[in-house]
Image (tube, rainbow, N blue to C red; front, side, top):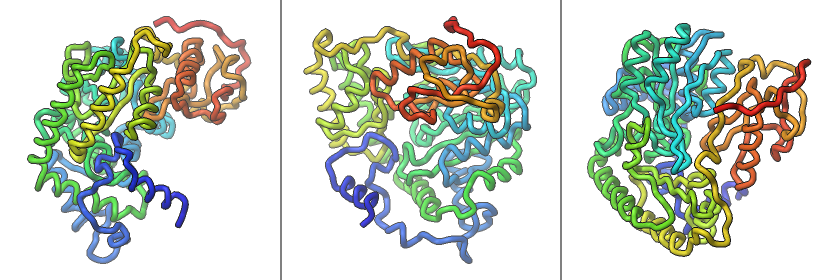
Length: 486
């Protein structure tokens, strides 16, 4: 038995409970072996790249369920959908308006398309240390200042479940007759119940990308690309779908999507009613915790938070003396609860309709236990101010594509202030860069990276995995030393 397969079998039989994606939570909705239906494009089974039969029917059914003009199956996740969408609505060397907290695949698309980004910055909610939504007025301002923008892309919801006012943003973008792309990877369940935010699909987005596997009972790597309105060119979308998806799409993954959607149509109302009831109950009980704070729908009172996804349990330990990673490790090692991710001073536990009442109760009891034993001014000494983990605004010097093709040299990170980065730096998850190629390495960026490392967060993107060194562009002028003014 192979080592990976052996470890997966052993882990599946353990008592570790999954508060992370995929949304099927290792329970599944069918008992069939994937080997039984792992085929290729044989007679009678259609072709994902030119669907005319059962795949076309399945995608049309998905479009009807979500209320879209067209819906496409994706077998390489939302990343492939984002690459497709951006290529389909922009011209090479064009300009695009981008939310800074977009996924790294958006940055990859900008590099491949040689696009010049104009960044939108989400608001920052100090008391939780998380980012809020995008202000529609900021979109309007940047559109006026940059009339040559070809498309707009934002992430909503965020990893933490924060939803922007997509309707207002779409109205602004459409006044300029350009398309709005929404990375709704974490919102494939939105359309399934009224207690969840309304999907971007129904709020005016031209292209919406959703990861089925994140919040629905579908296999990892499954996603949907939705098209509405008349601005996005269907033929170009289909062209780039064939570019960014394998020529041998997995029937196991497509069958998983088809059966998931069938399950939602058949049992969705009952299952989601039960699920929403459980989530409302656990959030109500979490309000009684003394030190730990769990974000609830009350966050909608904050600036630029249009709505909030109650499926996300964002567990904040800000001001307690704990770091997010300390809580993450304690939940994992002591209580065998595997959460999705740790940030500076919070942890995200992802839930789905496949979570059991017993599993949610285990998490709540663990939080009560940690909260009871937590010393606000005890021996643990991790305290942060309101902006401790807030990423500074980017100082863009060169385009990403230009920077990747320029001569570079490696130097110590601590000596790189004022230099232009030739690499990315990002936390994964969520995969949003704090530094991209072509951007200035300011003192604030270097300080932030040190803080990330100090609390044990996974910082990625550089060739040097220890992040002691970084590749920077070779420049003839002397490195500038200044601190970004916020």
